[in-house]
Each structure stands twice: as structure tokens, then as C-alpha cells.
Image (cartoon, rainbow, N blue to C red; front, top):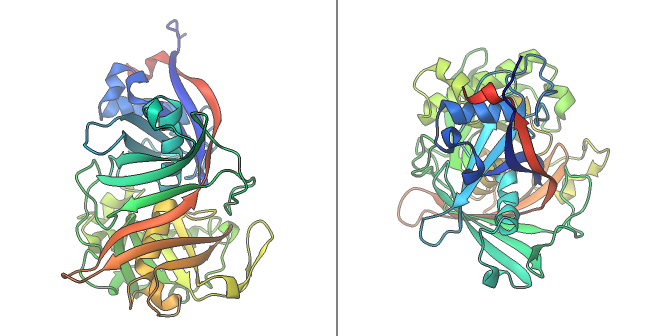
Length: 399
């Protein structure tokens, strides 16, 4: 018996890019959950429906994938030049874990619309056209500028912008990630230079594989890039080719752990299990024709390279927004595995093929005064509200 009524918390369920998540205003959370800690984690896990030994999220708002097991907390920003603070929690599916170590680039596209719709932006700034929302990404301590279409003071959601991995067109939202090449003073750990080891290519000693060339980069999100051919893959794989293969998944986790150790994100291999969101691991290959998950043919002539990435231990159905920043930054630096797969030429933007289609993203990098840095990365996404109201969780969640 549970005589106490369920907690009823205002929330908005939103799609951002190729992800979905439950958005909250910080002030609407129960007092115990307005601060980092066990109470907040317990609440968000119960909202999503984790941990779920059946990996279905039947009793929660999650969608039983890394793209749909996410929560966002928005609050007014006290930081000069910023409108809102954006805190992101990646909720594990089968484990009692909320990973706060990185950002979600896809859900970043929904932060601006949420901020406008919930009164975080002064009405006098909501002129028809593109409204710039200045976002402080609190996990990693970085600035994101979101340019959101507005008409009559309201967010415009409808449009003809198509994003591969999303079934329907919507209005385009342009995201600009400012100085994303290291982790700052947020709740995330690690960080430093764009290339934490100082090298554009390192050699990892990976159990079960041996010596493996890798580009280790911290731009957008810490990412370990390897060549598809070096691990027995083609670079055209879809989710069905990876996610049902326990041996391949174990191989990728071994690569991710080795990369995390070399990047200084963890000190012991066993710590990787508690840091599932970062680093990401991705594999690259030169351009080639392949069939995307929608059945559409992606032609080699239309892309610069192929990239697949894993998120929370599974191959992503499209591409994470933060990993897209890492791809753009690495592609712009001569000698990285990403740059080599894309042909080895200097570039300010790159179009890469992913399991759902293709995506173009740009980055401005420089090394005039020493190590490589990325000054900004730019990409287009879309977002819309799926449902708004209240989420209900059992009252004893915060006992």
C-alpha cells in the first residue's frame, strides 16, 4: 500500500535533434531534488523508469535507448551574458545511474525553445525572426548559442528542414558551440586541451585487440576515434550489425576504457562503468555508397567520410550532436584519423554519413599560439514539444 499521493511535477517532453527527453524547470522540482545528489538522481531515474532489468522502460518516460533516456533541468542564469543554465542527465537503462559527465548536443536544440516558451527570455527580445538564446551548459562549463525562429512571441516549430534520423520536417534551429575544445568548470570532470595527450594520433593497448591507432579528442564531448578497418568493420554498419553482437559491444567497451585511461578521464579500468556517457567511441572510414536505416541510398559522392558512434554501450541510430562537434573539429586538423578518412585536406566543414543518413557540421580550429583549439562549431537541428503537463512518480521516491 502507498497511502501518500504520487509526486506531481510540471514537465515538458521534447524532441531535440534525434533525441527525446523530459525537461524540467529547476524551481518546479521538489526541494530535495533542486540540488545535486542522491535525491535528484533517484527522482530522474524514477521519471525515466530506471533501473529496468527488462530494458523496456514500461514504467517510465524513457524509451529504452540512449537517445530517449534523458532529463534536462533549466534555470535562469546568473552568469553574465547568458539567459539560462542547462543541466543534462543521461539516465542508464538497466543500472541505477545518472551520468552527469557530458552534454547532449541533440537536446541542446530544444533548450532555446523551452526557455522561450517558459518565460526565461524577456518579451521585448521576442521579435519576429531568429531569436538568439544564450545557454550556459552547466555539465561542461561551456556556452551554446541557439538561434530559434519566433513569430508573434511564440516559437515556430513547423518548417521544411529535414534532419536525417527524424521522420518529419520542422523549423531549423542553428546551434553554435563556443570554444568547445575542453571541459570547463561545470559538473563534468576531466578536460584540458583539445587533444588531451598532445597527439593527433595515439596508440592504445586494448585487451583482446592489441595495438590500435586512435585519435583522442575533447571537443563537444570526449571522443575516441578509430579506423573501422583496424577493428574488422567497414564503416557502413547499422544498429542491427552491432547491437545484437555481444562480442563487438565488448570490444567497443574495451576501446572506450583504454581511451578513457589515456585521456585521464578515469584512473582505473573499473571506473569506466560509472562513466558510461563519456568518452564516446566512434569508428571512421572513407566515403562509400551504403544503404541507411530508412532504406535511402547514401552516395559516396555526397559525403566526405563515414562515421558510426556508440552511446551508452550501443551503436547510435544517427549521430550524437556533441560527437558531431568532435567529428568536425577532428576533421579540420591535419593528421587525425577523421581528417585522413575525409581525404586529408584542410577543411572548415565536413559532411559525414551515419546510420540514418548524413549531416554537415562546421568547425573553426587554430594552433597559432601552441596546441590545437577549436573556437566554435556550428550545426543545424530541429526541436518540438511532444507533450506538456506533469510527470507522476511514487511519493516514496524521495524518502
